[in-house]
Image (cartoon, rainbow, N blue to C red; front, side, top):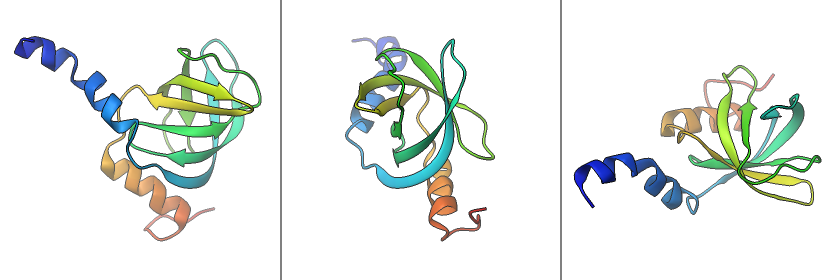
Length: 117
């Protein structure tokens, strides 16, 4: 593997590592929009730097692109990894920064500078 190959593949390697990273259980209202479809209201059940799990009554096929929108934030692009019995697991296209992750958790736990509305 050359240095160039490693740099090109750095996200793929990091994403694999972060699939096993700790995820925080949450209960965050959000909108999930699958590619080519209208968005729907959902609840994020867990959140990590590399992805999330949410309620999704409609079947979402693995490999499909989607966008997650949390209140007050821009949409985050992700890819469906799995769907099972009304839940979907997705991997973010770009890892969340630890600061963004911590701010989201603080906002919805109510222990940070943000307050739940």
